[in-house]
Length: 565
Image (tube, rainbow, N blue to C red; front, side, top):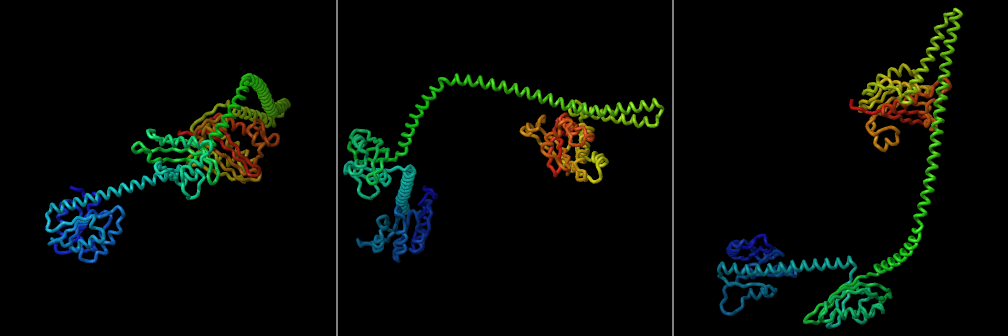
């Protein structure tokens, strides 16, 4: 039982009289064939296509104009020749049937089976099955032709891609065939005849001609393997260009005699040039290697000598750097000592002077002004205590009561203190980031730091301006932490204090956190305000940043560790 899905299972039936068509279709469908019944030649012709298996028709179908059928059959591809099964009426005598003769006129009868009616079911099935097998062979032939065409296409694409030429030599007739690429390798561009002596041998380099001829003779020698694998030079017959060619091929033998010799050639001129250049490079490299070996004989001694020189240089540099650091330490200690001595001298002068005056007034019995001088002495003592506190903050020796703080709420509370401290011509703005959250810090020291920054901002805005205190979250990675000494990577809150004051030049910014450095007039500042803030931030695990431009204002940011409470 044939499968309906198999190609070529469709049968066209044409029987114009009575119920012959339906009867034939029913008989064929018993064998699982797909059947289409056509009323006449024109309809039959319109149904003919490549996947038709067999055409079954009665003699009456041929009684009309057969031109449409002839045209449809003429349009078939070269591999296709649809089989016909013709059901003819019984004939008397030996007179040829006129319709059969008509059928032969358009070359269909050579692929047809004629059955005389009446005929049995088995005869019909046998004839159709036989025609179907013939049709299946046509489909197989078509597939083989397609595979052959694809194979030839792949071979052509491969040889084109690899720039391979092909040749074919008939040892019996001496006929030689070259493709265009093979001709080009022998410098031939015309379409003239090619011969073994006048083209192949004549195109070879004189030094390689005998070798190549011997290789061909050996491949064609009866009993040999027939393998041909050689490299030779050619001198272009028409262009005179010298080329290197690699040729491979094989001989075919019949009855011990060579009957065909085919192969390929490829231009290896560039490869040969590369090999020559490589050989020259290797020769030069050998010379350089020899020179390097000569140099290496004394290299260890030179390296040891240079190493000793570098070690001496490094030792001298280390001694110089250590001396410089010691000098800088002594200079810093001298500046610190001088500043402390100067400020303490001023404060002690106020204390001692106030006490001495008070003593003289008490001794003389004038007690009315004693309180004023004692208050002046106490004020000087308090300023001395504040100086000590600033020094402790700068040196990070003060005791901090660090606790979690809601930074935004703390700034709102500090705003009232700043409002009472700053003049009315300075506007205070709070820009709080809702995501700022909590920090770990000493509330009093943080308030003192903000007050110090606000006072510095006030002094930088003698004609008034705007003071902005802001909060923002900040993630510090390892790279950024290395740029901020003493800071570890993690989550921080940046508290920024910005003014619209006169700003500072770069040289002032560079020294802003130095102890006792101040730009204020004598007697108006100790130069420890920013130093104290710097010490407080570092002791809290944070850092301080400063950004200032002359005429644009200053922003100082406290980076303090964030916490989840």
